[in-house]
Every structure is written in structure tokens, then in C-alpha cells.
Amino acid sequence: MAMVDEPLYPIAVLIDELKNDDIQLRLNSIRRLSTIARALGEERTRKELIPFLSENSDDDDEVLLAMAGELGVFIPFVGGVEHAHVLLPPLESLCTVEETCVREKAVDSLCKIGSQMRGSDLVDSFVPLVKRLAAGEWFAARVSACGLFHVAYQGCTDVLKTELRSTYSQLCQDDMPMVRRAAATNLGKFAATVESSYLNAEIMTMFDDLTKDEQDSVRLLAVEGCAALGKLLEPQDCVARILPVIVNFSQDKSWRVRYMVANQLYELCEAVGPDCTRTDLVPAYVRLLRDNEAEVRIAAAGKVTKFCQLLNPELSIQHILPCVKELSTDSSQHVRSALASVIMGMAPILGKDSTIEHLLPIFLSLLKDEFPDVRLNIISKLDQVNQVIGIDLLSQSLLPAIVELAEDRHWRVRLAIIEYVPLLASQLGIGFFDDKLGALCMQWLQDKVYSIREAGANNLKRLAEEFGPEWAMQHLVPQVLEMVKNPHYLHRMMALRAISLMAPVMGSEITCSKFLPVVVEASKDRVPNIKFNVAKLLQSLIPIVDQSVVDKTIRQCLVDLSEDPDVDVRYFANQALHSIDGAAVAQS
Image (cartoon, rainbow, N blue to C red; front, top):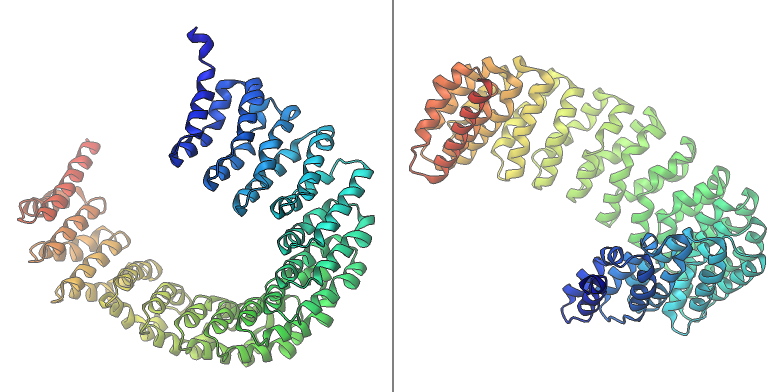
């Protein structure tokens, strides 16, 4: 009897849990659907589990979302693609719920299932589902239907294909803006499956309707369709049908539509080709760069380098650079920031002479901008300019500004400068670095902000790697050792941090002769934080120095610290002693 009842158990548990008031129990039950399906077997999953899920009218969106996701990968549990159609009813009902994310997940799962279904099942089950949703009274069903046409269309008969194209055309003219938005969003995917002979006649007619829609939320989605459809059309058709739409959209009365054009501009240029870009889209882009709305100028400014790549340097200098100069002093800090994040990339496009003549003054103006993000965006891309104009000119024109920024009042700007210093050091060479930036490197170890001090310590390690231990011994080590005597305990702690980072680079000899005596002396500090950092530092030195030094000096120092009154000092000292013992056991 027990054997007979056993397969009933999972479905009974599922039913109980799905009716439970606790949402977490219901969620857990849905997430275990695949396990339950395995226990039931393919036939009972098809006949009992799937019908039950179709009837399950759980009102919680989280549970419905989980169900929509699970059903998308359920084909193996119902017996393979020949039985895939049984999964459609529960997903169809999920396509009609009010919550957008549930509908989107259900559509996504239906697309996965439909793309695996056999041609006959697609015609018998999937296409009727799409038609039912497209004719649904509630707008949610029609919105969902728009995302399924590209799957349903493939493998249909010519009669059905004509019907589907006609239905999609009706959705493009639906009374509800949400449905027209969905139709605009999915038009590119649908068009990719439609035969080329119908593209110009039918799909472009639908597209034209959407581009003239009264709702700006529909028109802005049609902008994305420009790029998708442009790639499907023949070049001459693209110029005739898509280019006028892009030019009109760039002058649209709604700033959201103009913003979308500015955002999608590079993709739109690729669609219409380089010739039309130069003749027709350059004036449109210039208009966007000078738009009244800051949001449009931000999007346009962020594309300036990519757009210039499509033009020759002369056109860029003639048409785009005047706008770039205006944007570098724009009233909106966000516009200037967007420009600063990409303008360095214009240097390789314009070449050395034009960069020196036109771009360097703009770089300097942005480096001195009052808004820290603008300065930050310029600093982080300096290497792109260095490759074009060379380090000599860069150091003469931009380095004074960089040195000034190293003491900027905003710590994130100082941090960006620190992270750039090793690269700058390798490009400038030792002599120039010592003159201009050497003093700053030690100054950062005493900054008020911890992140700056930590980055400063890391910077010393990277400089030691770049210029070698001998240079570091002469220029960095004496100042770090001097800092260990600083009256401020945070500065003493930072010096220990710098030693721990530099020791592996400096090698055993310098570590034993210069660092170790200072560290041992610091173990007698009155501040517990210093002492337990000494214990941690000594532990990190164990692999670097000889075993004799470990036994003679490090162990004794740690034994003293392990008897310290402070519990944290004792803990870290004992940790270090254990690692010495562990290393000794490993060697033996």
C-alpha cells in the first residue's frame, strides 16, 4: 500500500504548500517543481502537475514570477519536445497578469519553448495561443502577444503568415499606448523573421505608423527600431526610408525622443552608412550637441568620440570641435562630465598637431573644472593623450594641473591621481618623477582619508617595482622609516603598512637590515593597534627572511607580544607564532 501511495506524496505536498498562507513556503514549492516532476514521472507531470499549475490562481507576483521562470525549462520533465505544447496553458494565463515582470518572464519562457517546438505543434498550439493573446480584451494579453510573433512566424504556412502580419499591424495601431509600445519594441525582432519581399510593403508601413505616434513613449521606442530595420533593408531603401525618420526624430518636439536619437546615434550611423552620416547626420548631431535640454546634450556628448571615428579629421575639426568647445564650458556639470569621460579618445582620431592646437586647451579647462567628477574623468584617460602627443608635451602642459589635483580637496580626485602615478612614473622616467612627484608620494601616507593613505602605501610598492630596490632604498625607505617615529599613531601605523607591502619587493637583505629593527622597536609602542599590526607584519615577513632571523629575532618579539595585556595583541601574536611553527613542521 505504501508503494502505491508514494508517488502521490509529492503532488499532495505541493498542493498543500501552494495553498499555504506563508509566501516563502509557496515560493519554495514552486522552486522545487523540477524535483517534484522527476518524482512524478513524465506522464503524471503532464496529466496532473501542469493542469494543477494552470488552475493555480496565486495572487502573489513573486510566486507567479518563479513559476513563469521554472516552466521555461520544463520540456525535459514533460517528455521532450513532442509534449512541449502541454506547457503552453499555464504560461498563457501568466501572460495576462497585471504585473509586468511576470508577463515578461512568461513571454521569455514561451519563446524558449516555442523555438524548440516541432513545426506541426507550432501551427496547432503556439500560433493559436498568440492569436488569442493578440485578440485579448485586457491590454496585458495584447502586450504579451507582441513578444511572441517572431517565434510563431517561423515555420507557418503562407496563409497563417499573412494573418500574423495583419494582426501585428493592428497591434501597432492599438488604442492602448502600452500595446503600441510593445509593438514598437518587438518590431525589429519580428521584421528579422519576415521575408524581405514584405519588409518594404508591410513592415515599413507599420514602422511609419509608429514613428508618427502621438505618444512620445512610442516614438522613442521606434528610434531603436531604426537601427534594427536599417540592417535588414537594402542600402538604398535604408537611405530612403530610415534616414528621413532619424533626421525628423533629431528635431522631435519631445526631448525624450531626441535623447534616444543621441543615445543610439552610433548604431543609427552604422545602419545608414558612412556617406549619409557625413552629409545628413552631421548636421543632426550638431543640433543634438546644442540641444536646449541638458539630458540630450549629455547623451550626445557621450558619443562624440565614437561619432568622430566615422568622420575624417577635417570634418570633425570643422563641425564637431566647435560644439565640443562649447560643451566644455556648459552650464550643466553632468554635460561636462559626460564630455570629459570620452574626449581623450578624440586625440588619436585628430592626430598630434590638431590635438595640441584644439584639444589641449579643452583638456586643461576640464582639468580645472570645479566639479570633481569632470576632473576625475580627464585624469583616468590621460594615457590616451600621451600616446598621441608624447610625454614631454604632456608634462609641460598638463602635469602642473595634475600636481595641483594631487592635493585636491575631494579625496576621490586625489585617489585617481595616486592610481595614475605609477603609470605616469614609468612614462616620465626617474629624473622627472623625483623632481615633480616624489614629495607628494610621502605626503599621501599622512592624508586625513584612510583610502588615500592605503592607496599611497600601495603606490610606494608599485614605484619600488617600477624603479627597482636601489632607487627605493635611496628615495622611499629613509622617509618611511622616519615616519615610524611620527607622534601620530595613524601615521606610524601607515608606515608599518608601507613596510609590509614593500618588503617582498625590497628582498631579504634590506628587510633584515633596515625594516626589521624598526618593526621590532615598534612592538614596544604604547598603542595596542600599533602592536597588533606589528604582529601581523612580522607574520608576513616570515617567508621573506631566513629561518635563522625568524628564530633569533621574530619569534622572541612575538613571544613578548603574546604576553601583552591587550587581548587583540595577544591574539595576533599567537597567530603569527602558530604560522612559524607550521612553517617549521612543513620544512621538517
